[in-house]
Length: 173
Image (cartoon, rainbow, N blue to C red; front, side, top):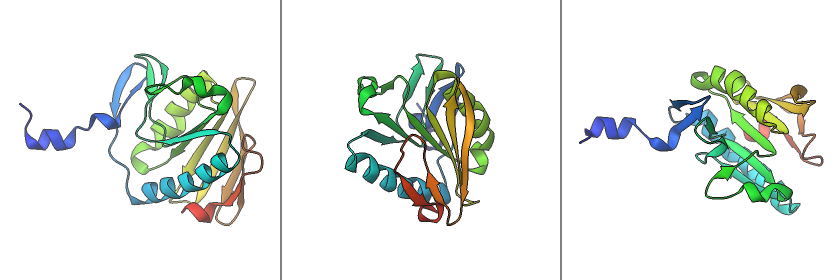
């Protein structure tokens, strides 16, 4: 039987399988949660208003390859033409993935998970740095990510994938 301490510490909802290894992450802190909540509202309004597909937020599994890579991006978008991947979990490749960076997950999100998203063909990948008030957007070009833009403070974020979307970075920090 698990002790109360072990039951509180272990939360299976925060477990991901990354390159075949089970990885458990601590729960996000306040700056991360604020950015996630505000960005979710902005993206959800845009996606729903334009009838583009569905937006999801963590914890929700994106299974790229069973038993090898099952990740939980902070936010992700699945376009209508790819809605067949929306099943019990997401089984396939979302069109857009957003990772919100904390000190505890910096390398995992900006290096390891970025390579996985690139390898499986996620069209657009955003890295949000709440503590720096900046967003980097990468687009998949010839199966490799290229930096499409870096936005900070009161600059307007522009997404190549979501063409008419525009908001200031300050709106989510």
